[in-house]
Image (cartoon, rainbow, N blue to C red; front, side):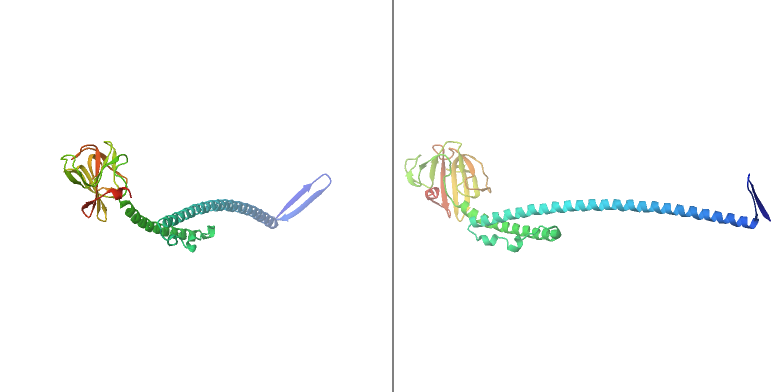
Length: 290
């Protein structure tokens, strides 16, 4: 079986016979070429799309990495600044500690950081190590300050508990320690303290640091405050109008403890001031002018 292809023009005439077998082969070949061509084109397009997707993803990752790097640099920079502030504080603590030790008459070298503990290199590559080292230095400095505080407290208590000064800010010495004429009987009698005349309501102050062992009425003294200063010393403040401390209170030198009055065996507003050593009254005058 065959097919005839006839072409007839004005000047030419073309006649071609093709068998059915050849025609079928040609059609199949054309179809395969078309399919291959179509398949190849689609594959290139898909690959192009895939490449673009991957490229876009990588670009986004690059942006994230860049942002992360920037954030990290900012954070590291902030940490370095904080460490610098901490180092400045350590330096101030060092100066304060050595100054306090020197003022207290202590060896300042005992409260000085070693050269190794003072050496800080604030670089980004060694942040972790520097933070640990600075933490150890701060702990050590706190221990030094705690020890110095204890020593200073001991020295301060000893100094503050030492009796000195007058029991009133404003007033005058009106009666001395020793035998005098009793204002009530007119007979000679032992006056076991000294008197400071002052305006009623003026503040009565402790002449040394200590613990209040009496605060209330007592025969002859009227409203009385008694303070134990340690080392066998006590002071008494009598004839007060009002008491402002209670038994068990810890008072400091110069702290107000009462108000001047005229209670008890008294003829006018004044403070009767006594100093006792090992339970016996002694002349307070040497302590007043110490």
